[in-house]
Length: 370
Image (tube, rainbow, N blue to C red; front, side, top):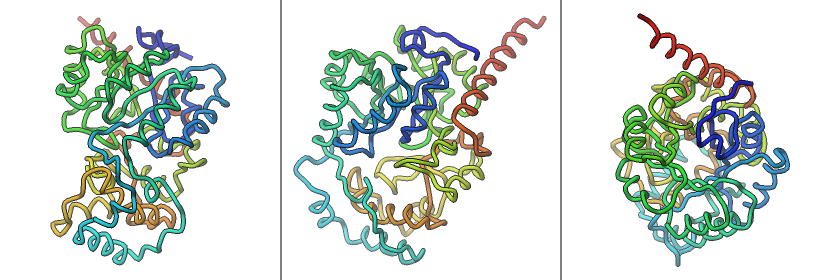
């Protein structure tokens, strides 16, 4: 197994500068065992479920280091409940969602998921944070939002703490709060994303960050891109979409079924779209009837987070439960173009590693040319 060392990889104890985000505990564990660092996203896990997810990863990897991604967006309601919010949703938005369900003949949901049972709130995030503070997790990254208090509390118990950002403005806000690393995430990224491309954002943030390690994210799914990220001054990369179509993601609580996996295999770099229809924040997804309905001229303005989830939670649960093909969707970045067939996490990781070495060798050969 080849190794590429940077100051950051040496600090966190991994062989290759690849960190991988996933909502699957099996993917997270497999990434860590392959020589990178798996980072499990707890956004969909209520506080009382978080420790079980941590245990599921730790049970597979032993003492190897791994991370957790947590969201702490601002402006979430504290005194509301899911039911009280749903009782006040705008009629036009309700009718639009009912129209989608009727148009695509979506059966009613019979299962309970994050989407139709949870309202994001400060107490929800605090409950998750409390679990992390008492856990043996090695690294914590804030995917959306943070508070200086949360960063300080995590660092006080020995966690390595970082944050994802999508603009220089975000970095200015986070510059002096004690973060250990920054993930500069370009607009090509899947899920919640900004508007600045990876090739522009990464060197810009590297220049601003000085000695603070920067990881590159956004549309990266090939090792040549990892080599390019290192050439731009990043000390590693943060990948999410690459793991969606792996065999490990076909099992567990956040399993991806055959139909959705087929859509991932078929998608090219131009087959994603940014929509606010799922969460209320801009999110890059596989293009589907879901993204197109919310982009139609007749669509109402999506509600802000977490109210959009309260609006569409039952329908999103039903779409997944009954695998309503036209509406099936998943957050995915433009790097989905590299997901072509069913492979294990270890196989994807090895291919990325080999491609990175080849990319660096190519750069060296070109630079030595007369």
